Image 1 (tube, one colour):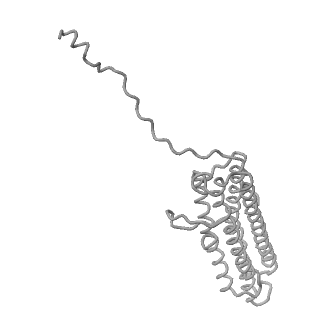
Image 2: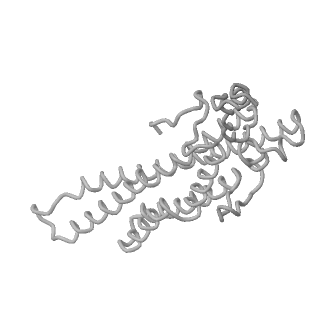
Image 3: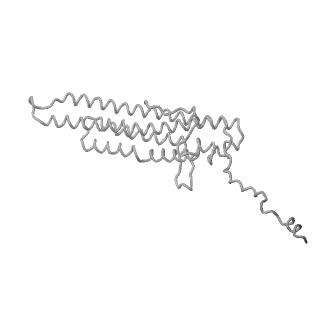
Length: 252
């Protein structure tokens, strides 16, 4: 074979490179329907209710409860002193005590309104579920995940568990139940704090219990679990809802 022929038969090293394999794509998320968007708005409002509830209990309620104790204690200390021109006036403390009690009653009224709103949101989710049952296929509401893994039924109807996370997550109806029980206990604590015959030790125990319920207990744990897994389902550390989703109002 001639040298020229051998050169012609040798494969060129400058041949075009083979295309690099494309990166693996994540599974396609389901196309969002009107039901998806409406449920997202409901979930966003539920998150707002839970966050506002936290703020009212841990800030407004705790402040008002402490003021009830402080002003009542100041009045008791003043009355222990003998009467005379040098004894401090009780009137200003009594006025502030009345204001603190009114504030605490206002806190309970705000929580009551939030509970009514939460119950309405749970009912709205139920209506969306039953509407989807009428207008969509069986798989859409009972089998197919809306976003990550939960079905439409999981979000609004029944309790479920996540073995991988080792905790149970409550449905919207169960969120209503735990908030109702939470408000009942808060009512009892507020009654203790506002009762003029309550002893200091009992009042202190009540305000400590109020503080603990603001950052722990059944209601707090249930709300945090629900928020965590809902955010996971919506694929983000903070649920980025639709741009027209109602934002949390600063004014309560």
